[in-house]
Image (cartoon, rainbow, N blue to C red; front, side, top):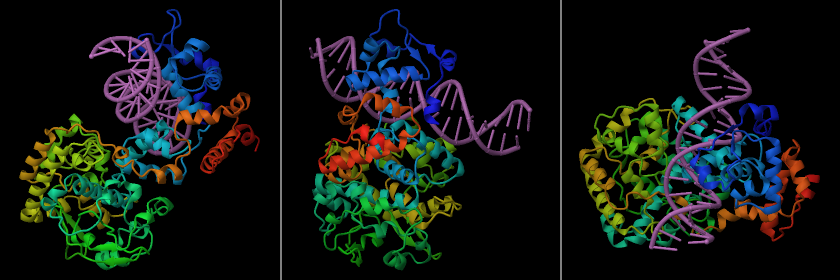
Length: 527
DNA sequence: AAGACAGCCAACCGCGGTTCC
DNA sequence: AGGAACCGCGGTTGGCTGTCT
């Protein structure tokens, strides 16, 4: 279908093609002759053949030369896009599989709107595809009032966030640990320096605990659960369990959210070992009310808005969104009104700047030690405030959305509420913390764009070996050149080629892994 | 049957980073 | 050093299609 739609007939070309000489991009990128207007609109099969022929001959890159050398009346940018999104031989066609969808959710939780990076993790898929999928999905879910992420992913993200924060402080500003109240945990700082979502410090059993189970008896269930959440994926089992990182009795929740979590530790065999660690740096408390449900008392928490308890991970956010800044007062308002869907979108995509900054500051990131110090002080103040008045603010938050729905439409679980709450750990809602927030938004270094990949690229062997098949267009070309051009072109327009491409992708991957790079595309096409 | 609406997707646009001269 | 060219990314647009009313 995609191929059919993207390759227009000549008749359609006449109808839809248009010429735009005014585009500044083409003016800058196109080195064409004065008389050759650049075409826009859908590509024709003839143009595709020309482009494929050119790429197979000259390789990828230097896209503006395509027009010069092949006569294709397309700007370089358009050529690159066409190749990357439709003509590359390794592209996977068809709808996303459930596994891919799950992966996208996880990756988005980890990376935010880093479509290109996500595409690297999803072999055969393009950033455009993923982006379109996500945008559609997000709109649908928002419209339905559902959270963006399933509770277990929210939970993972929230824990990762805590680890990130601790990592930042433990290594970059260890002397400020007293500010955080972190005094007596002995986890080596190195564990925090390299954290990313894939390397969470707890085993899958814990990630898979159905959030709902906590509703009945949070503590005992939390300690004893071994069954799986409905959304738990094999991905978690295969990629998020860094056994080599699990030393004996390491803290599972190396973050700082609440005494319960702080008290949980895992042994190497995955069994829980309850041991209070005695640190609690966060500004909210976990409470266990008469309704036998957890409530996370936080000074703020936009994650609750619109029922989106599973907020966007903060490190995925950009900080320089004017619209976000405009939301500040609403966050600080003691009588929060539920935002419109549009504003929720903004909120989902852009949590409070101060918050984002918090999570963005890792030792490997930008070196903004000042910012770290500043936030240390902020956290200290927030911590103090939480002891003074978090009860009231927390109740307000928890009562503000009585009919929250979970990922699958079920009432939101207390665990996911907790997960959402920890995102908002330093989100201002009280007057004092609002001031902190406002001060953070104007502090130096506030315009950092947080990118998780930049934070934790240090331990890449897991990711690259497990997930990345086509790591880059350049390397892809190195494989492509092995293939016969004719066979390749025939595959492009052959409905049966899809499976070949998948096989090719797998074979290419395994070939690389084993040091065999000579997987022939011809051979695969013949399968 | 037909119009409205939403979903989907290809393509475009603008911007920022990098490289080249 | 600085400007131009190139490249890639993320956001947005517009057209097609399917579904609903």
